[in-house]
Image 1 (cartoon, rainbow, N blue to C red):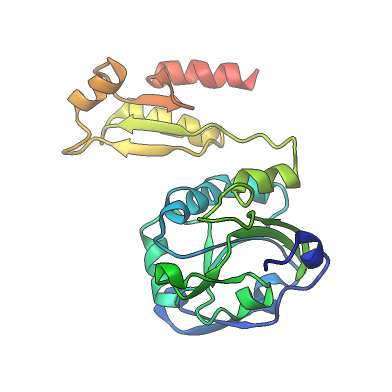
Image 2 (cartoon, rainbow, N blue to C red):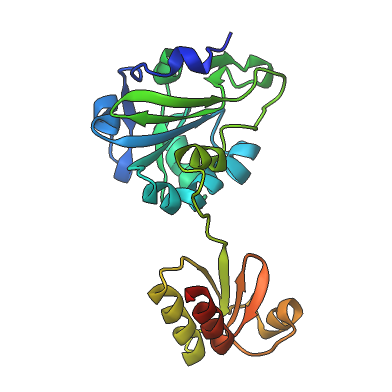
Length: 249
């Protein structure tokens, strides 16, 4: 039976040592090193490379990491009952530059949390139940545990729920995407304007796949760059300048 959030909140995290491989070198990471004197968000999941973990759970925490840090979080840890090689390889193929992956290969931390569950019916052996928590100086302040039901529920351990707990008024920036062309001065001007405004954006540069035909198919326009904000087309560098000016008012 899974523990209740109330039984975990106010307690210290389990005192264990993780066998990790940062920079492809073996290194022991203690819970003191990870949690002492810090405000840490932890999210734990059934396994690297599994569908929900890869498509939603990890990417959204990575996307909201700057907002979580702006609201007092020092680090964001993803813990799974996988070895260091698997966790590192998984992270390498994910958008996860803001996440520290922690291999709980023996399940010691997960067992200490009371979250080790039997997944032998799937050929997984013992794995972690999905949950998230906010830890301050090694003490669990808040836990969000997925409901104990069949399958792999994903209802409360998500990044947005954690952010709402930290700050219900936190503003989540809309995603910004730019289609650009190498050597294009207007593209450089648009990128500079976004950086000066402190806006994080994804730049998709023209290549064999992102061609002018693709750009026209998506935007109806032939000129570079084309900037999208929250799924809405803003336009080129001049339109972006107008959008930024309106945003600043």
